[in-house]
Length: 344
Length: 240
Image 1: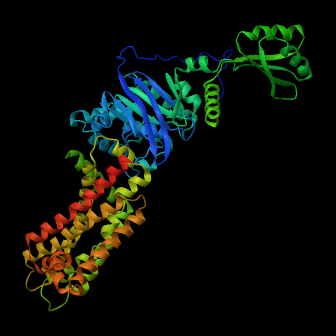
Image 2 (image 1 turned 45 degrees about the vertical axis):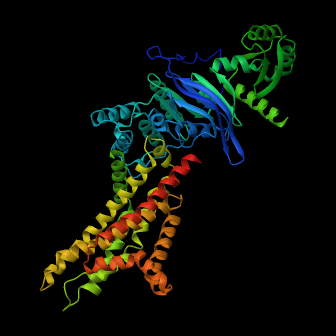
Image 3 (image 1 turned 90 degrees about the vertical axis):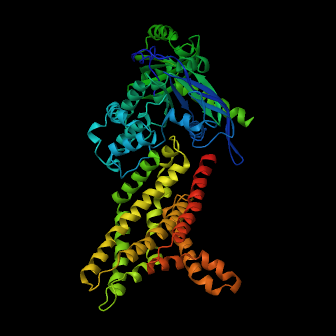
């Protein structure tokens, strides 16, 4: 994932944490949840909450416990210990009411390939006992929101991966759930489809809380208001992407400077002399230009000093870009910390 | 109940959308047609399908597991079980819905064999009687429903359709052979009990035209425990 380039890229779209039109009710409350598979302690005391109007990303490497946590929330199996409430209903004591409040898109969107899109959505409407008066309207609404109108009479088995994912999403949102859970919704999609999926998810949050799991960091950063980072079954961090960057990625910012290859040695010397430069690396370049990566605690602030230093030393410079600390850096740092602690 | 019927309808329609459904129907009709042509449609013989109905237990043997094998196994294999069990539907509704869908498929499979009765009507000097015909169809339908319940149960335990098919076939062959042989081989004291449990004797009664409500209760009653076990297996997956 490429980091946001502060100096050149426009600011990313800022979404409100809570939609102003919807009361910020707690839709999901996960409290000290554990899961054992035999002797394997897969989820170890996970606690977090999510409110209506929020897109919360569950981020973690493969095997971190994301899917297990999601399956406990959706009622595929109960937690070994702890409690989960969905829209105020316990998933253990009142599972049907809890499930009724959830729309769930499992990983890889399992669907019946022999059914038509329309037929499948009608079947899902029956499972959720949507009154016949509302059924047609809700199916039309779901089809319109995920833009699968032209495919509605096609057999699901003949659809592309992207369309199947959208059919799964339409089925998940059909009964207008308060909590929409999407497990790896961007898996197997091309960049255009990922963008469409992101836009659809953002449109859904007006009336619901969305919990999505992913290991695609850039996608989570662009889609989610809040991120819960999970590894080895425990939560490592929970906050907005901006908060996490500020809290966990201090000292990890970088400035990328492109200088003439002939001046590379002089440039390195000049850059190392600047106060606040924590490290310097040479990155890829071409025959004429070479990129130097300056690590700094203040990548934005140090740009002026770098520019002045290069001008003073008469070094040819083609570009100078400050890279804000990315969620990837936060994620990597937390993961490294977690592994070190586990090893200790 | 509407949820159960929705699941049943989906299951029934899916079987007809898939080649496996049509091949199963074709196999059954070929088997029945062969028995009808060789053992029923004989010159000078009374207009009765007793030979066909009497073989019901064996005729259903290869086809019912083919209907039931995918009920749960395919859902478990493809992952569609996950959206199903995370919807607000009870295990009982899921099992019953799938069973009823398969039962509807069985009924549809039996329907074309009514043509045999029409043929007999046409070619016989004395037309066949309605009573034995109805009893004969009970000899196909009721054991078929019992077989399906066993197939549903086997399917709920595995994500492998082949294994579901073979395990159902194994259980059915075991029951059929046991039902036919044990009452004769067992010690004299055991024979009445084993004869009571034997379903082959009940099939033969239906084939003869005897409609005994106790036989119907027997087959319906015997179908319930496997369905309960299938529900328990599904619930166990939720509680795993």
